[in-house]
Length: 252
Ligand code: PGA
Figure 1 (cartoon, rainbow, N blue to C red):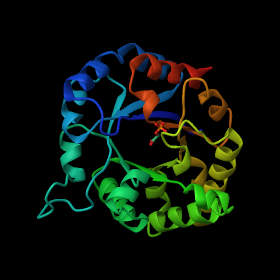
Figure 2: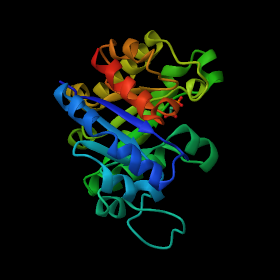
Figure 3: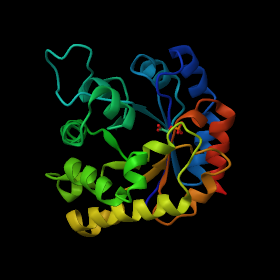
Figure 4: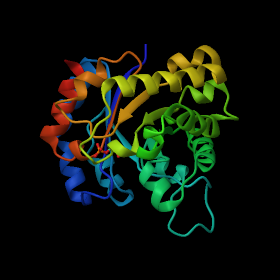
């Protein structure tokens, strides 16, 4: 049974103090989540991580939004998995479409990041997803399959089982134009088929989230899909009331 997971991707929002305040306000939510066997977390900016970790109630996952694939060295402006582990971060989002678009992040580089994170015992949250042009050309499944193969080739089944995938169609991110639950389920089921061809039955253990304009009023529909194991949420995760409503939507 795959545990459901909700992660708020704060992107470049919230000062450390805002993050600390939000974390404190999550204490009742972590209890509610635990009661329903759901994991919840947030992904602040690098500079807010320590403030959020220090104020996080037990059970609130704290994730970074990126990591470098090297452990240390001459990589100006970068942060490694061992550094994240040291300050109490347990997850790292990698391959987000905004980083692919603005920072040239590739699936092959994400493979290196996955290896680096697993080595430190951190959970990679690997994002994939197609552009509107690819979607309209009917090439979503082959495009996403390639992103999965490039990032997962070379991992053992046991390593792969520790990775969380987030399917986020680019045309649905921050646009208010969410993919229908049917599209999310079809694509995510397709991702699981690719994983099954690579890792056999272990594919059933790998959690795959949907992301892209998830809101309190549509999260239920995604959670009703058998292959959707949770949500990676941007805009609707920024306010505590909305974040709470997302969790409640996952429970209902
Ligand atoms: P959104 O962002 O929920 O604001 O569409 C999702 C994401 O980019 O992870």
